[in-house]
Length: 113
Picture 1: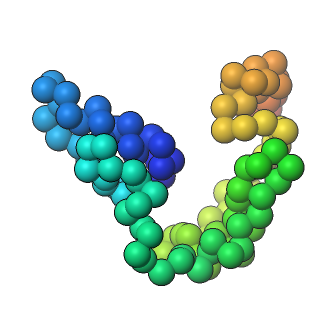
Picture 2: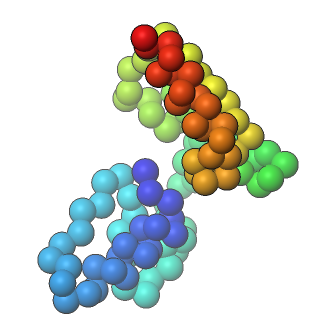
């Protein structure tokens, strides 16, 4: 899912004469110059909003139960028995923690041999 800001930028980019069309998937589609936040102001508040958890850095997330019940309720639970690694990073750890990301990749390569 694209962030609100990205959807708005894409809408503006769609006004370029070299862009034939845009495809929005599960997203608001604002008109050029329209604030994305205004699109949902007359709609009921989604149930998951009250369950958002905001960390010290200001990042919001849904707890797993709320994610399953309120955000992706039509997606079956998946268990792939994968090893997971968590890093104290944003959505772009390859930029903020490249050495840590490289280490995880190299460990995965070594484990596959």
